[in-house]
Length: 116
Image (cartoon, rainbow, N blue to C red; front, top):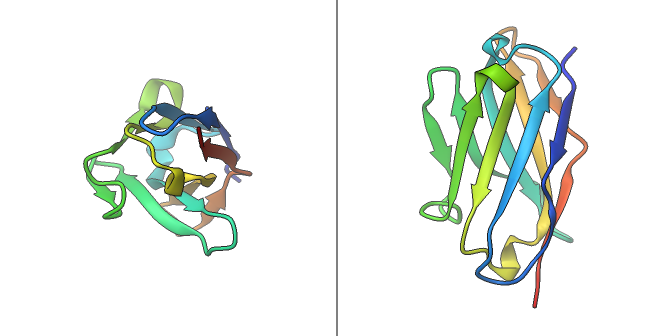
């Protein structure tokens, strides 16, 4: 069982930055992929960024050039640095972990609101 706790969401003005954190209850060496997904109001959840155990990263087109995903093994934490935020980035952001056994685990989400 893997528990994920997200933090770092909040209200930010357009053009601003936020850093989301996702801390796992287990050593993230046991997790093959960690990712950030988001669900805007009234829309489906979508993958924004993911990072593999060897550091390979994947980004949605909407995140490329603005968002950066990274992982800190010492802290069992994955980060999502979000810059140049836009109103359309408003969503609940969820952390997801996939273990080597193929199990998926989700955090409860953190709300990001981009508004002036």
